[in-house]
Image 1 (cartoon, rainbow, N blue to C red):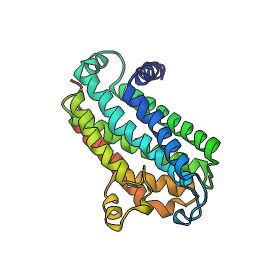
Image 2 (cartoon, helix red, strand yellow; image 1 turned 45 degrees about the horizontal axis):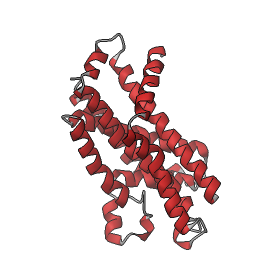
Image 3 (cartoon, helix red, strand yellow; image 1 turned 30 degrees about the vertical axis):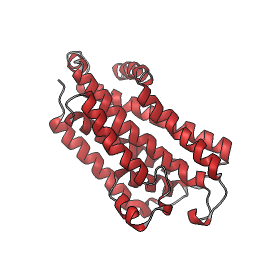
Image 4 (cartoon, rainbow, N blue to C red; image 1 turned 45 degrees about the vertical axis):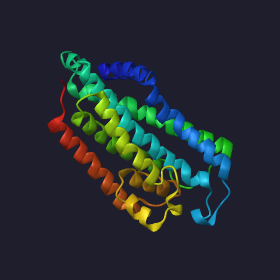
Length: 247
């Protein structure tokens, strides 16, 4: 445990020095909140079931944080470590391989959680964000979503030849997801065809789950989303375990 915490502390300092990781986790969601919150405000609207734009957008922006951390930050960090030979040197230390990978998961989870808390605090302070769910349910949904996309990030890092490939692959997957999943623009305004297409995107299920739990829906109403996320988690872990390369 001591080795894990010490390594995680080092990884956290490295994380904060990565401009793309810092921006997409802590800055980008806030920019969207300020932009769309400033334009539309947070007055209840029939389109959103009597809730405001910020009420439905805030949990969706959490999905942005999760997606960027998993698909971009983890994949770039791990593939970069392999490319520079850091993973090979780590493996030669007394630290177990599981500890090295767990440190990555721990740091990225804490950073994602910090970004989500900062987002909620800003939305509450500036726009009167409403919450009618159960905090433990939202926390559990957030954690499941993080683990699922972290597994996907490790899978991308396993398949990418180098850091550049991981970056391009992560961006190619990430940006269609954020624009078509309801993470930036509410799916309620999408035409039926686009809404149908969005069902095939993984971040759509994160958005749907977190928005539902945020307004107090029971887990039973989101079994499809849970199954999809568990499937992503299982597939990411199993395939990564088979194809992950340390050098």
